Image (tube, rainbow, N blue to C red; front, side):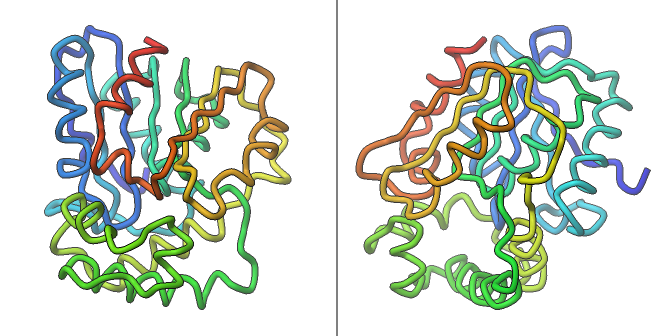
Length: 253
């Protein structure tokens, strides 16, 4: 095993388990605070810290597949092999999906919010550099450039929505590695299938999120449900109205 992740287990381990995986630049505690506070009263919440996204993290961000494998091994070390619901935001959605495809951990319900599931090819490198620079600025309260805001579905509300969810000490190199990992992930040629019910979630202002619906359906042999939120951008519901995320999680429990 490469890394034993800090899994941040909250609640009674004998209860049904919910896996929450954060996205690029985010801190698990900052982006899932209200979700953990509400659901840990009844369920066991597991939320790992990705490398470079916390004070005591180990490892490196090499690929979605590698991180998923390390997380699986970390979960099994805690005797956790059954997850009632896995929710991932952005890069976390890709990791949650890969864990679900691997089937080493039994995931009964999968909710993927704003993830990317097709490689950007030759644009991986330039996009990763731009986004690392932009998120490095964002953590300091500087607005994203207009083209990035437009793609993510934001006007001038990017800072108020995203900054408070970020890990404040994240480095630009960690951001670059995380974005590169997200942008090279690709499920088109994977033969594994998703056997559990899947909920695809995104804000209607996100430019690219809806284009993956058909791809996810093609990899699923169970029900696929689409939940799109009006007038919001990427991770905006998680950042400003997390009770809507809680509602969707509770629907499948």
